[in-house]
Amino acid sequence: MEWIRQRLDKIRAPFEKGEKFEKYAPAINALDTFLYTPNHVTKKGAHIRDAVDLKRTMITVVIALIPALIFGMWNGGYQHYSQLGESFTFLDAILHGASKIVPMIVVSYAVGLGIEFAFAIFRGHEVNEGYLVTGLLIPMIMPIDIPLWMVAISVVFAVLIGKEAFGGTGMNILNPALTARAFAFFAYPTFMSGNTVWVSEASNVDAISGETILGKLASGVDVPYSSMDMFSGMIPGSISETSVICILAGALLLVLTKVGSWRIILSGFIGAAVMGLIFNALPSLGVTGNDLTNFPWYLHLMVGGLAFGIVFMATDPVSAAQTMKGKWIYGFLVGFFSIMIRVFNPAYPEGVMLGILLMNVFAPTIDHFVIQSNVKRRNKRLKNATTQVETAV
Image 1: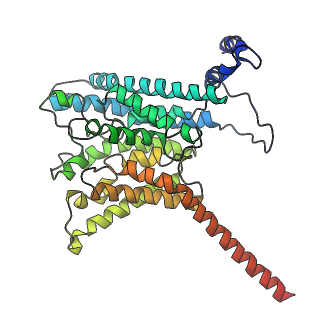
Image 2 (image 1 turned 135 degrees about the vertical axis):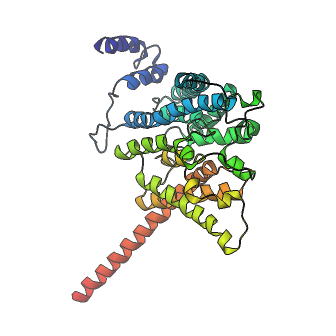
Image 3 (image 1 turned 90 degrees about the vertical axis):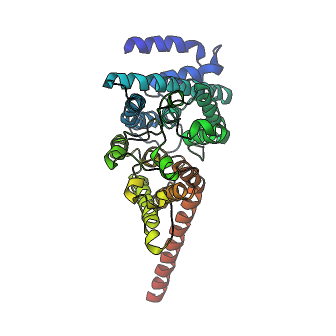
């Protein structure tokens, strides 16, 4: 490692302050801080000594995403070969899925980091590690056969409009990965929905019908999958959103390392369960519903992107609520609205994306009212205490 340190110091020399390439120093510093701990310290205010910084936080989230990513690669190949009726091995499935997913990840990082570097140089600030997670999340929530150029344009929109327009990392009000997916969904709807986009190369083979469970229910078609299939993730869907087991493994890591808020995760699932129970109760009240209304509430938690969205995107510390009570409210409403949108809009039977983006917008409002409630309660307590002192005197 000392040899690498010496080489980096030699490369950085022309980019130091006052040197010829000083303007481009953020690009070189980004490589340095990716490999080593940043050597800058605070110049004023409180000095906090802690082993946790932005880089370690982002790397922890990336590690938490790996189980879902690897399963997504395997499931991509599994769905392709199994619906063709061909025999295949575990390696065959992994390689087929990787051949589709790895290029998407490369494009996402190349385009996104390119824009981040350009803005860092233009604004004269350091490159932040925030895109390490966003760059991986974007391909993971896309259909497996989406063209690479669509991924690139979606990344450009997410970074420029969803992030840099607000000031960069830590300033965005919307989750950048979901912003990319929302853009792709409304800009290229035929590539983001339907019964041929969720299974690799389904559009080339008449025998393959890769509609998701929610799509089948919205169309009034019987679901040919067991609850264990839904929990394990052996179903069609976005690349890494199908396996609840792998998602919960990532959630456990986020909670244990305190990177992700367990309050948001738990309240998100509670909100979804409550909305599911309400819909399940409608038929007993004489209200006619559809197949999504009658879908058991606990299965609602295991299909679509609900689990993945709540664990990895609703917990985004930048766009989520910040107060303790606000996190409970925010998470509950994310789950509540996700199931509501899913059931009320059969044309778009996946509501977690819109549910999270909606609550991203209202997260500051939730925090505001929570803080004001605390202020009023303390003022009331102070007033009562002052009255008691005056009475005693």
